[in-house]
Image (tube, rainbow, N blue to C red; front, side):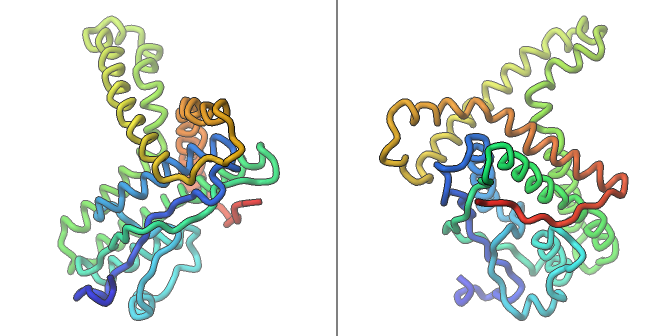
Amino acid sequence: MHLTDPNREPELYLPVPYFHNNIWQAPLLMRLFVAVLTQMQMWRSVLPENLRSFGSYSTTLHLVHEVGYWATDAIPEDSRFYWKSFFTYGTRFRAVPLFIPIYGDAVRAKTYWRSLASQYLQARRWAWGVTDLPYVVRNAIAHHEIPFWSRAWRVIGLFGEHINWAIAPFVVIFGATMPLVINPAFARTTLGQNLPFFASSMLSIALVALIVLIWIEHRIVPPFPADWGWFRKMLVYLGWTGLPLVGIFFSNLPALDAQTRLLTGRYLEYRVTEKA
């Protein structure tokens, strides 16, 4: 890809991370989390404007030198490297998807509860990418040589990403009931009466998307272990009903934790994720 690309210098090349090495040994909630994470990265690969460096990527030593190497004062150093590259090269810079998998492990600590805690801390560390916002805003204002809308859309997209990270699963699950509980007067309005119907329609659409997600996931994961019976395999499919818990505990809460810590100046330290 690099050798045949005329714009080869200011580019990052990103494969699709598959967290499947130990997928059938990992706890259920970890399996669901990495299934969503894998497919989210697949989705980003077909929409390169949303693709940012995550985990493993390749680039040239020339680019690394030009952008000043990796940030030593940022925990989300992968995404920070992306933004340093963008503000160095402007619209010449691209994140190029490579449609090949790179395999990693799902979180699996020595005990079930330590696995849950490790996954939460890993998700919070990723959500600490919200610290890119002041860096991006400051540089978007300073780099007038980059077209305005190219800068503006990236800032808006980054804001939206972290807002959705912190609230989207909660809104999907409880969005139809919370307004009615908080404001009984709203429940008597036309919109309040119809809100459960609208929410039900949205959840039905989401159910179709979930079926597609399950179908894709079970085409790309390794086969079931040979010693698994039909009952254990059936439990794998029934386990998808735990996806709302994954959204709350490994998306909403870690993101709110990270953003609240940034707001109050309670900074994080880097912790290596336990994978026993």
